[in-house]
Image 1 (spheres, rainbow, N blue to C red):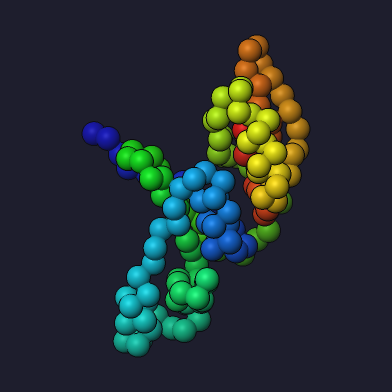
Image 2 (image 1 turned 90 degrees about the vertical axis):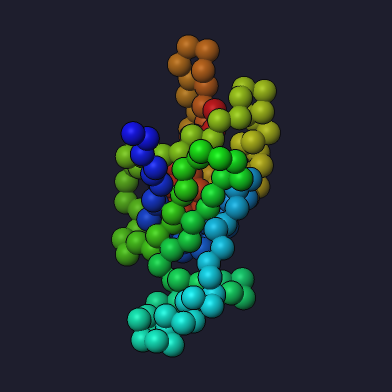
Length: 141
C-alpha cells in the first residue's frame, strides 16, 4: 500500500513562507476557497480571527500550502507556529539541481533572501547548507 504524505513546517508567517518556497522551487501556492472561508465565518463555524487577508484574498490564518506542478511529489504545508526556531532542523529539504547549476541556484536563492550557512562535501558530492528567511535550514546539491 502506497501512503500519501505532506511535509509540514512551522512558521511565523506561513503565507510569506509559502510564497517564498513556491518561488524557490518553481511550485504553486495552493489556492484557498475564499467563498468557503466566508461561509464558515458567516455560519459561526469559524471566526474572523481564524482568517486573514494575503495578497488581497481571504485565507485561513493558520496555514498555506504549496504543490509541485508535477505528479507524485509531496505537498508542503506551512503552519503558524507559536515558538520561534531555536535550533538545528531535525528534518530539512534538499533542493537538488546538480553540480553544474549549484552556484547559480545558490546565487538566486541568496538574492531572494536566503542565507548561506556552510558548505560541505562527501566524496564526489557537495552541498551548500542555507537558511530560508525564517532560518529553516535546507541544502542545495
